[in-house]
Length: 483
Image 1 (tube, rainbow, N blue to C red):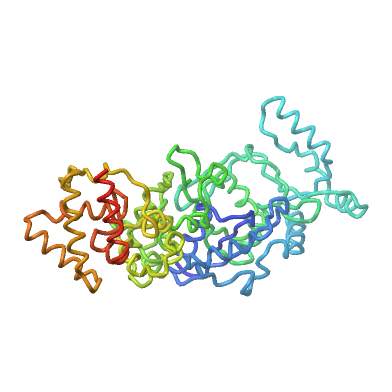
Image 2 (cartoon, helix red, strand yellow; image 1 turned 45 degrees about the vertical axis):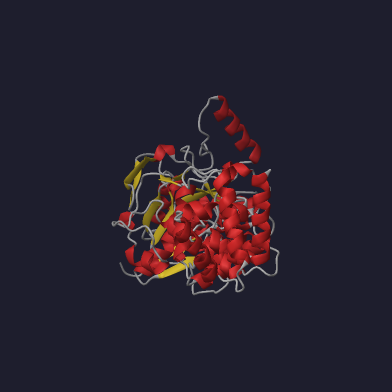
């Protein structure tokens, strides 16, 4: 492919949903794959849905995801402005041109008349369609009425018979009977364009080669095609993406409580894991790989790998992928990322947080898990002595008490308190007594944590807690077992 230009054109409605980010990602990957350009355009003509601060969310999300665009509102470019509300005169110019070409007409119907038509359609249980009353008004008559100040809109003139067809990369040839299409409004009374019209004008003027969007536009795309054909413009390549669905089969939706990109970040997911997972929601790389860096995605991406089948958003699969990223992360970076979560639970200034991070790294799935895994370090939680009974470790209340006594006797002798020496001292006892290491150390781990499962073994926990706290917790455990 040559001269590939893709765009991401979100509406500033307050958040970045997963489907939107996937659309942006695929546009970015296609452009980068073919050495083209990726453009950001803000589609804000629907002022009723505009949310203050939403544009900043869009910029923040794309930056965090590494989807750097070549042209956009904040960096400019040769096809600007890149905010639709700033392009109002352009739309008026092209709407009037379309009227001259016969692809549109002026409509003077009042809101009252249109409401009556809608009510009549509802009463008949029919889909509302404009009845074309103004289609026959001569252009000169229409412009005279406009000069007299009569409110009006500009409507698309849909052919009255036949079909409109187009080819889509994912779904193949799509045909729609023109009778199903409405003479929809292109330019509203306030001079602002509707989505369909602004989208086509901007895509043409910005030389967009591939239009990537959700499959909810499959049935309305013929209207876009008719606009291109009325103007005599070449049409872009259409790439409609499959739905992303919940486990219950419903479309992924913020309204149903499904997370946005920023909410996933707040839950402790990594940006690179989220982007990696989203890439695979509807795209098959044609090999067995599941973990991709962004450059690797660029290299592997192909629109031929896109599927028309609905893609399941599985939070458990995302957790698995996030855990893979965390485990493979350099220890220093993980420690830095984990620190804010560690300090939520650990207030003791004497605790080496880097050592705690090293313990939890291989056992962490999402960063938000960390506080709950380490909160026993600051203070020993209340726990039942039944935890000392462990069939797998072959411990019971009697031998647990015995093993804690042996641990205390050995650890009290120690001067230097380092993991290697703690381990060496306790393993000497294990060898001398002929006890299995897991059997001997499980009671110590329980006494130090008050937990059945811990992010590290007994000797690692002892080192982190320090000698004084370790001996205190052993004494507490022995008292509990003696009770």
